[in-house]
Length: 378
Image 1 (cartoon, rainbow, N blue to C red):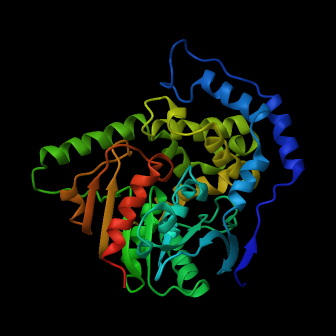
Image 2: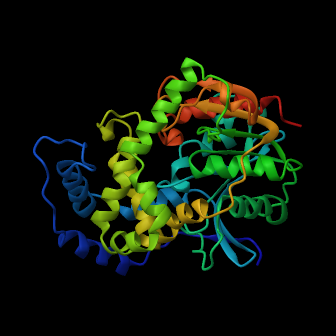
């Protein structure tokens, strides 16, 4: 099916149903003075839900989302939704940007303008990109996979076909974080003939045993990763093993969905448990709403199951690779380990920010993307 324009238009009945569900919320109790230690803080979530019910204007956010040109197409029977904004400059470089979980294409709303129209933002027009931001299969306005096997490698294949077959870009750059980093690196590994370079703000590494004694930096990273696995990775284990069971609760309760997602935006961002110092309530709720109105929380978390049950192929990327490492990212590995897997051409330790870099530190991320791809432009 050919590429066709798409407009986000949520039926009013969906919004009325949401209001009723929010009004009927049955709240749990909470340990006194526990903050966010046990998960999403009760007092904060009650404030967020009160705003969701009485102050949040979805139609205004819908207009914001629709200010970008949206499209849909089908590739091998999989419906793909994407934003496609042409660059304003002499020779824009095509750039595919992939999001992760629990984010969405909305994460990129602050960086699309500066990347596509640098002149408007007082930057060199030669730095312009044609930006493509898809929704991952099973996320947001993309179709929900009906068969097993929609793993990172398969998504990378679909996105390669989106860029080359559907949009006509035979050579392009790719960027991403979270699942998007895996997709980006998989593109670089499997389709080097199409990639001028890949840039990520999260660095997956193979934890291979070695006879070499780790450096102090490497040992600190391994200890950091172990703490995360022990204290913060329960969500991943559930989503990797029993996504369907979890989906019933999250698809039924908007407050449950908000709690599940907000927990990660707080824990993984550079906010020190003061989440609204980094994200506005409208930003948090717009991202949550994309999952709610499309009923894709279940299909989104299945990606964890697909990943863990796929044959593991260690990343080995020979195309030029850039990394922007934000200090509050889940994992901040040392460059010495990354160079064993990737052709690192630019490695930048960022001053602030976390997992949701495009929303937390958009100007800094844009700077890094421009700087990395500058010498790779044809």
